[in-house]
Image (cartoon, rainbow, N blue to C red; front, top):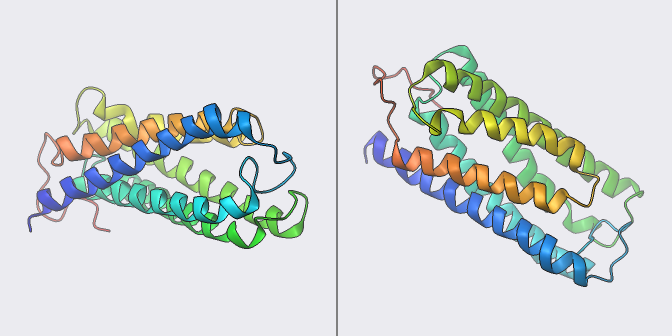
Length: 213
């Protein structure tokens, strides 16, 4: 299988993960939150503790799909071959992996209050994952803008994702979190589509120059 084909497939997986993330944010904001009777000081809010178990597993799958998309972005060479591209994509991948782990760590504390030790630690894990992802996307996004190997909207989508993730750190404790997650999903979808539709940079890299992860 060629490198281009692999990158295209990774981009498709990332786009699917982003789209599912966006849909989940819309559903939570528009359907689940208005109908819930779960107190907002429970870790599982707005889901019941029983419902949070399968929901967390599904969300973990979303993060795995997003990880594939970010890996495709890294391997495409769209951010160039420099140090910033490597550091940025590694940080974004690490952050996504931490978010994957945090979803699974939510399961044992599903029936606990937010101020309990377990939920506090899991919340901190989500915070670390979000911060790492934000930093990674910003660094890789700036590298992509400077490299100009993508044109049009594709050139800016990684940077936009990082900036929005940074904003989400502030929004995490507000009722707008689900909407924020939905927009994050839209940006991830755009990144996946960019990788899928233009898997090779417009200014071709020499073999071995793209970020190898």
